[in-house]
Length: 345
Image (cartoon, rainbow, N blue to C red):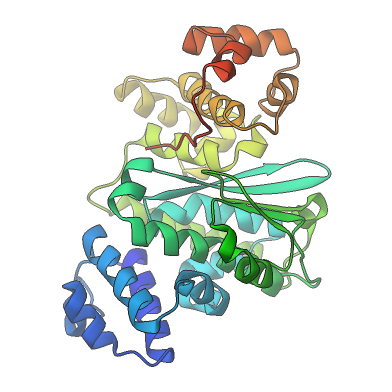
């Protein structure tokens, strides 16, 4: 069985070799058994080992932007079947959607949320605050890697060179010039926010290597691999994460979601009932997460959040939010101590 976390670790080690380091020595210092790592059946490095690996790679290259530069250099081919899925997507927007849905196979620290409107497509990285505090080197370098790699590969998938409108990061002011160079756009600082803002037309850009038949086959293979993972999340958690990462498609029907997980709507209902939850409850939970996330930022008015979440009337959103939290959206925002990201566990 292909282990995506192990594959990512091996790609990281290959990049350290390009930078003149010894992968064997790095693994030794990180507590990783280098010689057995590539062998089938051996486990991927755990979170503690990956934290040590990121830390050692950053220190020994004397490169505080190691993750950023790794993301700029990595190719989709290094991701194996995941890379093939992205290359086989019909549009850049579809490729981003697949990337977000598959990200949990590589890391549990981040989730990707995509908000697609007519004029702008925003890609957010939502992070787990507990994991980010426990593994700060992974958090810093992996966030840089994910944003740089995403933009780098979007340009490789499409015919036109894609220039972001803006990138938002919680970075230090002194780091701005390197991020501006890497992203080729204005970079602004905002606590807790990782976001790439792209022109809305990017989502419709055709992928040069699109092959729908191959994509369907590869997605089936990934679903089969996911079914074989022992520590597989419950179905309602996977549906929650899928809806969150495809939140710009807030109107996804139960039938569409069931098809994505290769089960019938009736089986989906049955499995969720066994887990003590309904599909509508999951949708409500996603909306609550997104609503609190948007309210914790200054960019969105309540009426805009209501529209983004699919409410035809602002009053309907206000009633729903009061039911979820006991507060109106306005009173909830007023009592916030500071902006924060709410990430799915």
